[in-house]
Length: 377
Image (cartoon, rainbow, N blue to C red; front, side):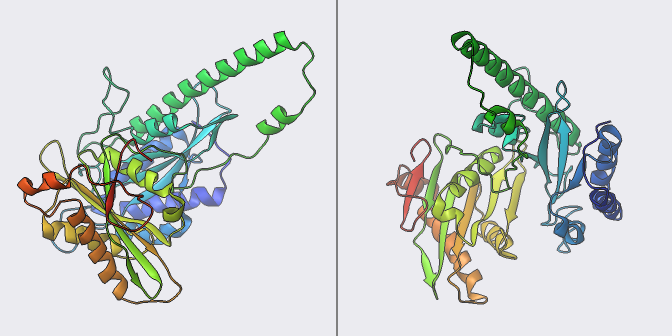
């Protein structure tokens, strides 16, 4: 049992959160899984990611009244786990767990994200961050280091243990490299300067990476982002982007890549998005996110369903101009999404889509139709 210094009120909130989930038949598996995780790791390890989400999380994850099955609503459940490393229990890592709608019956696995900028004294690099982000999407052993996910089976515990183990490997490697470097420096400089910088660094409070994923991420090779013309209305600006995606594991990386663009990152709603991807078993994996613009993501998702496009991620960015434009904003979001699909060739006949491949490069942070390919910044 692992104990962490979380406030008792936080623990109480999380227990209430679990109880609220158990009231819904569609969320019973998630509730039971969380209870099992508490028995394994201890009551003080978990907390709500955003306490303001508590009142709406369970309600948003209810079955959709339009005939979809249990747990297939639009809501997601998010919570944090603060876990010690297996061999260095004084070093802890904070992991954001995002449970998709319909889990564990859905084809979409949970998503795990490292929230710390430092593990111990060492700054987290993009390699570690990416490995954790791809926990369920990488090839499982013996050919890879991912965790297999099967629809109908809970998988958070295996994922958290995977994160603990790879963080331990990463930390041990950095610790040994640091010790070797310190030994070499001491041999070359028998009387090192009496700087207290190193010891002070160890006492700094841990820095957390917000869910906007601040660690730099290169756009994967071969991935191409198509950008629509901007729509401007009363100083608000809307820009749509479309990306062909055949592996949902690439979606968080693409979104993170976009957020690294300073212009996109400063938008009021940088990554309103939806995606539809054919799963390995032939089923459809689909999800959306409003990014603070209520119901905007679901509208894009509805558009993708109406147009019957697959293997696509659509992102709309909105910069608020200071004047409220009411329902017109949804019209512009839908138009930008459709324009981005058209620019990317998703609305063409298969025979015509080749003409869209290898489009002219353009900066994905600004307006103008064009494309940005992986490997080029």
